[in-house]
Each structure stands twice: as structure tokens, then as C-alpha cells.
Length: 492
Image (cartoon, rainbow, N blue to C red; front, side, top):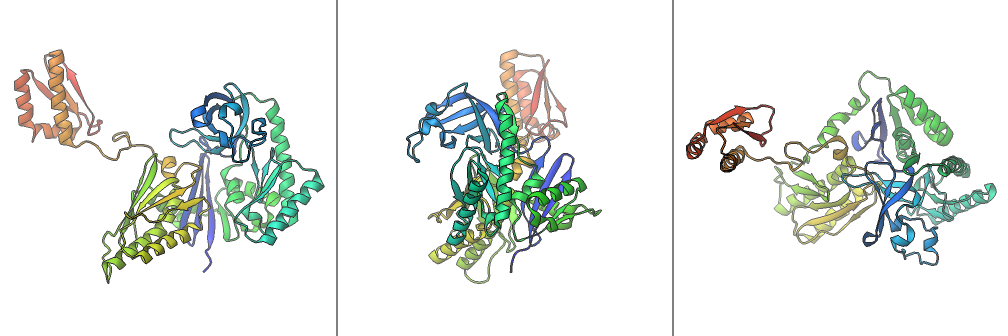
């Protein structure tokens, strides 16, 4: 059965959210906030502030809080320093840039965590069917277009348009261009040329560390990048955004006009599909499987780990069959969760150990099949002897958790806090240390109510012994605003 996809666009003055729904289930969520718009595709005039020969990279000031990161491999091949170098050879970074150099760069990846934006000097202007490379001179084509005749047709169409309109630059033919008409491709190419002329005119007089061009807003990028033949409806709950999307579609994607729909309903658009609840579930560490098993997902800066457990599922036949079925169900849910949470980088999956080699092959085949729908580049390794599978998923923007959440101020992102007993013993040691150093007249312990309660109850004898040992009065004061592991000791 063919999948039925809808795209829901929820617009408020400060935030735009796009939900990709497949057969009634949320598959992807994209969020853009007015105060922190995504930077991918934005073009800046930057200034090189530091060159790192050991990393073959440089840091570039583009006017953001964190300097951007430019690797030597991301410097355009038309740079004079590449002259005479083989395609696989990259000159030393110090031959490509130097501190203080002004360069034009484009954002490849948004700043993520403590890392600045990933930059390139190979500028590009995407449209629905093509990517225009102003400084390029070749015609590339997506590997996902497999038909040799179609690849040749598309290449001929682009070459013919270049010659007819005397166009400059290079073009990459996107997957969505398969089977489109020559007129559609010609319209894209002419639009990209007009846009580049506008951008290049702004480049000449720009000051360093300034924004030259930014990509269209999320609602329009969605139509350009996310819509394909299986999408039946694009629902937008803002009249203004709907009209802009309709005008955009008429100019560049007329086939989408009939799919656009303004949603004026009293019930929130996301409420129709229980999207809010699914977003809340995507913030949870544990994901329950229908069989009774579960996934435990832990995201760190270096990698994401996913642990597969049988949970309450005991199966009906052999233990091996139980483990196999749980792993098969987990494979489907893992692909769903990676797309929904937009988890990238290195993902380590700890499947339940299986003895059958045939079962292991089937689980890997299931992973390959469910990841086929993912637009992001993915690599999957074989199952290791310990039952581990390493997945790498290209990361271009922050994960859902990084966008919607922040580290807990109490545990500082560790996920655990000190026990009440640990805090009590820490306080007693601290009073002893301060008494040896300051010899105060008296001490007042200011702590969370639960800590004070324990000191007055189970640890009352310990507190009394300490008071007798230092021969100083110790009083207690509960502060409900303090977290469990925070306290203060006042001297008198």
C-alpha cells in the first residue's frame, strides 16, 4: 500500500513548525524561530581570524557569537591554490587562506552545541530541481536518478539551456528533477541566474562579518525541499503564510498549487493529528514498543546510544524467536525515532544478542529497508559479536531535543543528582573544614527542606556529635528555593 503523506505548517508570530505526517503518524518535525532562524544556505562576507595547519582548517568571523569553521576540503576548487593539484589532493590550509583574509562563505551546517557553523566557499543557490553553483563549470546529477536514459536527457536539457541563454556557472540536477519538463528546468535556471545577479551585486560593497543573503523562510523551504509526488496535502493555518506559499508555488512550482490548503479550523492544526503529544513523547528517554519491549535513547555531544530491551514481552515460543521479533520491531522504531528527533552523527544501537546468523541478517535488512525513506545520508555497519550496530547519519542542524530543551540547572545535564544522604555528609564535612579555618562563633546551615528534615531526623545524632566536637552552636534553616544538592553555610 502506497504511503499517504501530508505536510502541516503551523505558523505563529514567533515560531513556524512543519510536521511531515505519513499515514497519520508524525515522521519529521522542523522548527524555525524568529529569534534563531536556521543559517544553512546563508551567505556571508567573512574574515579569517585563525588558521590551524594541524587541523587543515580555519576559523572565520561571520558576525555570529561563535566563529565559523572552514575546512580545506570545503574551499572551492576554482581557488588558484588548487591549480595543478589532482582532485584528491588538498593543498595545506595556509596556502589557501591567511589570517585577515576577506572571503565569501556559505553555511553548510548550523551551529550545534559548542561548535560554530560549518562553512564552505563553494557557493550554491538551490531551487526545486537544481542547485546552481555560481563559481562552478560542470553539470552534476543526483545518484538517485538511476535510469541512464533519463540522466542523459536531463544533462542534455541543462546543457542546451546554458547554450541558449549564455548562462555561466555549474548546475547539479536534483532527484526531484526526474521526469520534469524542459520548461520547468529552464524556469529554475533563469530564476537562479536572476537571484545570483542580485546576490553578487550585494557582495561587492559588503563589509566583513556581514550577512549577504539568507535562504527563504521554513514554510517556503518546505515546499522546495520536502514535497514530492506522495504528498497529498500541504495545510497551513496562517492566511498570510498561505498566500505567500501560493504565490511562491505559482511562480516556481505550479504543480503544488492544488495541494495547498488554508486551514481556518477552531481546533489547532496539530491537534487534528495529536502532534503535540507525539512531540512530548519524542522528548522522553524511553520509547515503548507495541510488543512490550522498549528503547532507551541517550543523546550526548559525542554520540547517541540506543539500548533495545525485551521489557514485558516474553513471546510465545522460543527465547531466540522472542529476541528476534523484539529486534525487528526495534529496527523500525529506531529509524522512526532518528528522523523524528533528527538525531545525527554516530549512533550506537545495542540490539539484544541473537545466536542465529540468519536472524542477524534479517534485522540488518529491516534497518536498510526502513532507512530507505530517510532523506539524510546514512551508513550502517554489520552487527558486532557484542550485538552492536554503528549507524552514521549526516547532521546538518540541531536535534529536536537541542531545539526544545536545555540542560537541567540542578544536575547540569548529567541526569542525576546527589542523594540527600550524600548532601548531608558533605555539609557535615564542610562545617568541620570551615571551623578549622575560620573558628566562627556559630554556624547556620541553609539547605533544601528535605535535607534539613534528614539532619533533624536520621542524622540528628551525627549533627549533635559534630556540634559537641567543635564546641560551636549549629542551627538549621530550610530554603524551599534551593535544589536538593545546593546549600550554604553562614558564619556568625
